Length: 79
Image 1 (cartoon, helix red, strand yellow):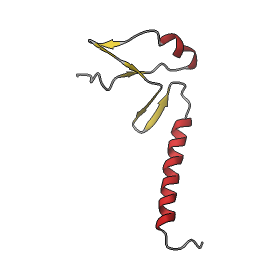
Image 2 (spheres, one colour; image 1 turned 30 degrees about the horizontal axis):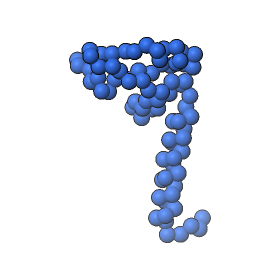
Image 3 (cartoon, one colour; image 1 turned 90 degrees about the horizontal axis):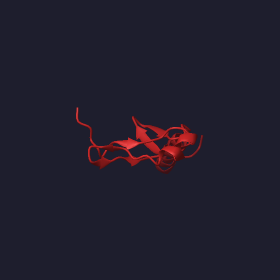
Image 4 (cartoon, helix red, strand yellow; image 1 turned 90 degrees about the vertical axis):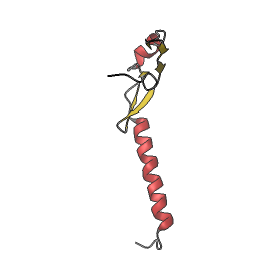
């Protein structure tokens, strides 16, 4: 199986290891791999410190957009 170097990234998990390990450079073949602090995979957002803040804020933004759409398109606002 061939890996796509453009899709491969490095993420150091944990607060203590992030500054120490950023000195190291990783590569696949002749291509240097990029660092990331946050990555989305299967619609789950993983961050380097394993906190869910960004995941929750994204879900809240989607819900607010949907509520705004419903509010704009509804004919009446009475309960």
